[in-house]
Image: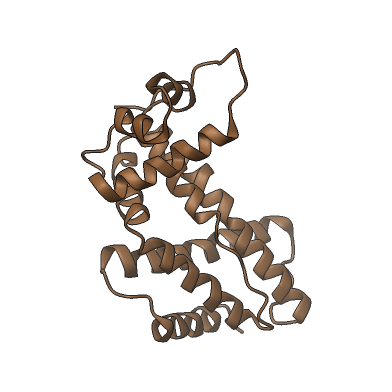
Length: 203
């Protein structure tokens, strides 16, 4: 089933407070009920809003969970630890800690599975999670170039391709380690991963 396109909305503007309550309630419902038993009705009750309020904001359960999980990843911050290696280790440990949270684990795995047959949902994941978090790669690369740890890119197209590749390598490795292999991304693993990543980048 394809995700429904969001309907045009009129009337009162959205309430940021209501949105925050709904997303928090969604994450708690994921912890308490799991993906399969989570319903918009339960989320609405937990958030103290009408069910119609959810449908005015989200087309359905899939989209709601994407946004609830995406908000968790917005907590990620790139530390300024004085070196590219230390910066990578810091943000990867943060990423792994978020993925270890039950609401992130169950929500992300579920929507990724649903997105295999839902193009609109796949694009929502890309826009809400992937594209938003590429900021960390861009910031980290810029900082490393200023330190002289990485060479500048020859042009904007090459810079964009490299940023995509770095993001895919980091996110793919950590998601596979924590969610697919169910192994810990602890400090020892993160140090080893960072060393391999940087050697691959020629640093």
